[in-house]
Amino acid sequence: MASSSILNSLFVGRDKDRDNIVRMLSEDSMMTTEKLSVDSIYGIDGMGKTTLAKHVYNDQRVKGCFDAQFWVSVTPDFNVEAVLRKMVDCGMGELSHNCNAVQLYHHFIQAIGGKKFLLVLDNIWDHASLREKWVDLKSLLEECGANGSKVLLTTSNKKVAKLMDSMNPYKLEGLTKDGSCLLFQKIAFTQYQEPGVEVIGMEISKMCPNMPLVIRNVAGILARKRTVREWQAFRDEQFADFASYGSDVERTLKLSYDHLDESLKRCVKFCTLFEKGGFFHLEQMIHRWIALGYVKPQYKSQRLEEAGEEYMLSLQDFGFLEIDSFDQFGFIRDFKMHDVMYELVLSLAGVKYKAADSNTDKILLGRAFLISVFESAALYFYRMKSCI
Image (cartoon, rainbow, N blue to C red):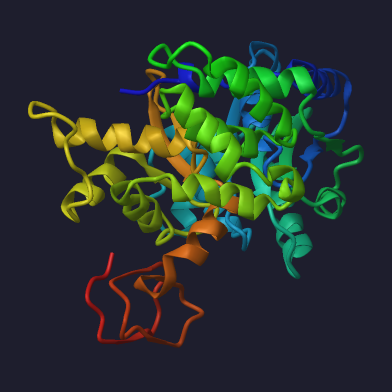
């Protein structure tokens, strides 16, 4: 099973940012007389806000300041009930399933009642009712928590941070040149490659923007190339005009998709059937892939579950998936899809993969192969082949 060491190994060039956020949380928490205060990390997509927040969340200096901690990956609609359910599940195990609103509130009180807590709200999007929903959630948090409690949010929009009462939003800039180079080296270079690829790799890394998501994608492609000839071909042919379009993130990231084999393409397109911003359980997703025939063993004695886990980690290496949470033993439990990658894959998936929600009145899916429905109300389907 994959463990938290994977996340730690890819955290480079952000020590100063981590220490700054840790200091904000710990000092404010110890000195403030406020019931609840809000800090935030903002920056453009692909800068590593979630990764930074995870390392802050797991820092022992932070853990020592709070009685309870909660991590919630927020969906674009900022559903308050969904946030409460995720907090309950995070703090008390998966108790929120199949419970009504009264039971949920009771579990919520048990989870944070009288405690000084840290709540991380990851990936907040701007929308018309955000302020109203935030006020509702904030009143519940203030009602139940102890003085000095904190909310840390991540967002790509500084306006969102201000809207949610963050007084001094922390802007996450790009990596330094040294940080970019180190991240590239950690991912791109392996023990199976020919001598000489390092020089070519350093040339390529200098052509990349200082955005972690792009660096991870490009390095993930090269990690699977073993010969100097392959690296030269990538630099001179596929990457030749990178300097002219390096700011076109979508076009750059599509290189990763183009380098996936067909099995991995099917697996990552299947992930777009789930809510944007939502997470999925590693083992459950692997079993879905297996059921659909997407997973093929790499050697005769390999179990399908083992091959599926390798698929999942490959998609993480390419930057399509990111770790969302670990179990109590430090093994990966949940993954999520980066928003930028979700939109990219969704645009490439075409009509064969469709997701619907309760706001959809009618779906005509004559050419669809797979669809998913969440929060289903009255939906009408035409020529549907499979429903997840």
